[in-house]
Image (spheres, rainbow, N blue to C red):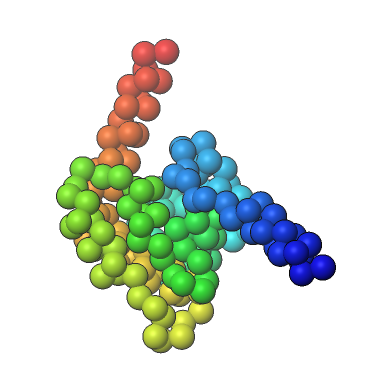
Length: 153
């Protein structure tokens, strides 16, 4: 009987032990759309977020929590996963420096903040420094490429 239980637990563990993978742009778009349904944000704040400005408002915090959770870069028990953030947001930056910045922003929620405040705090920290500058530059470059492609069509 113990053997059957062990096999059942092993099978359960294998089927539920899904390895995290970097999300592609289509997946990210789908996650963002889902999160806008789950955590609606005003049109004004959507415009701000498109310019990478994230107001410290409940709806925006819940959206940030939703996207980070669905992307697998944040969980409500452990907080941010620096290794996953490093894989997801590859920027032209020394990997050790990148990881150090993320680790400096990833706290253990000693304040006992709600998950949305905790996730937002880490997001703001990451986006306010060198990584945020690189992400913003990358997004603006991608936007320019998309505009150029549309003009060519």
